[in-house]
Image 1: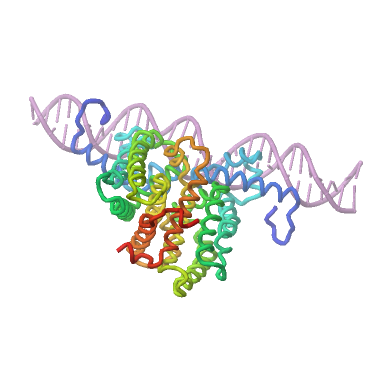
Image 2: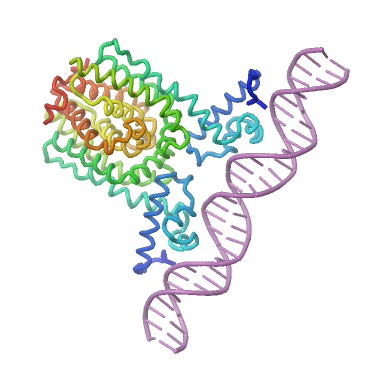
Length: 213
Length: 213
DNA sequence: TCGTGGATTTACCAAATGGTAAAAAAACAA
DNA sequence: TTGTTTTTTTACCATTTGGTAAATCCACGA
């Protein structure tokens, strides 16, 4: 068994686990957890179903492994937000990184979106152990910037929510965007410009929400 | 059969169809299309499965009926955007209405999110026939405001995307928000304030994206 | 009260699906 | 080459699930 403890995985094991996870990402992100079948994953991976169950304990095991492995990648852009950098530039660069990542990894974005939509039944622990601490840490950083007068008064938590919502929207709601934007080749540049303008305006504003009355 | 043509539905038919659709909304929005089962819907509705299939042709029929019926409600806030009103107030009020609606109808929001995430396999026609024309119309209105100098230069399409993404985020990603905001009773007020500030800043800015460089 | 048509239940079914046992095949160490 | 371990396949299985047929129940008008 590949999952026996204290045994370094063989080359073939590494390769097949990787192939399976990639196939699973494709299928899970497209159909959701319940909508995906082991047969689909097996076909996508070019392996037989029992062979897949030789490498993973079951469907749920594959899904959880995927989510866990991708969590770090997904949080990288936020990790890189530098407390010692220029506040406006840091946040705008973060928006850029997030949008780029969603554009390059739409399957990952949809995988997470699917999981959260269903109430995060399988990734909830990771949310508490990984996402929450990072979120709190970076919110504190932004709050510090605000208190230091380097940013207009704003709500760090909801700022981050807005960034996540807007950047991932293009991956998660691609089907809708495709209908509404027509056959436009790539909305990415215009989306990036718009988000830069929007968050730029919010961050540049001297008096924050006050002027909106 | 209830679906025979040119027959006004009896009182009991109306009631049961309503009960079934409400139960289906509950189940579909929680588990997605594939994740939902007729047995769950039947249990939620307090009816037997065959009885449900007496009122609808099948699972897909229920789902499509739900989506179609809710589409209008969902678009109401955008329909109400008045071309003759004050641009900034109209858009900010639209944001408010959208956020309120997402807060009051989270199941509907998640139902749509689920469907779009899967590539809109069943609602695609409605997207073209209902959403697209409205979207184009209102984008033209906003573009007109920009050209008239009543708004700073901005991208109407992506502005609407941003509004949708941010307002629906709280319903669609509720599980995540719950983890990150703790047991905070209701994020709605602070979310509303933040969105008002953000879109207010974008719309108030005299030179649009230019100042961000 | 009786009969008729609409509404509901009971008893199923076929296909799909997650998963398993065991044999066969391939890799590999000696 | 041979023996052993790892990998893969074949042949299944039990459960779930969308759906159906037919019998039964029931509301209601004549």
